[in-house]
Length: 200
Image (cartoon, rainbow, N blue to C red; front, side, top):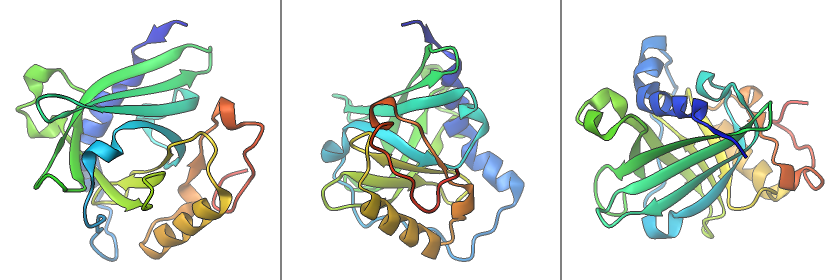
C-alpha cells in the first residue's frame, strides 16, 4: 500500500498544539490533572484511536488511525502514527517522545519535526496521560488547555461500558463530549456499537 507523508503534519500538530491552544485563549474551569504515575515500558506498543476532538492535522484521515510506541536505548520513545486516507493510501508520521520529570511521569512531550530542530521548544507538544485503566487497555490523552483530546485502546473494539465510564470521567473534568468524534477502525466495524458521546 502506498505510504504518504501527509499525516506527518502531525509533526507540526503535536509540536504546535500548546502554542495554538494558548493563542485561542481557552480557559478551563480547573487545571487539568494527569494520572499519578505512568509505567512507560508497559505503555509501549500499539494503541488504536477510538475517538478524538477533530483537529486540522488529521483532516485527511478517514479511519484506521493507530499509534505505535517503542522505547529506544536512549530512553526516548519512537512514535509511529498511521491512518488511512480517503483514497485508501496509508499516511504515516514518525516522531519521538520524551518524559518530562521523573521516570514514572505521565507528562510527555512529542515532536515530529526533524531532529536538528529538537532544541526549539515550539516543536515539542504536550502529551498528558489523564486517564488510564489499571490494565493499560484504555487511555485518554490531552494537554493543559483541553483543546485536544484522544481516546486510545489496545484493541480496535472498545468495551462499551468501559468507554461510557471514561466519558463520564472526562465530562466531570470539563471536557465537551459533544466535540468528541468516533474513529472508524476497519477491524472493529462489524462489532462497534454506538454509545453516547459519539456523533451519528
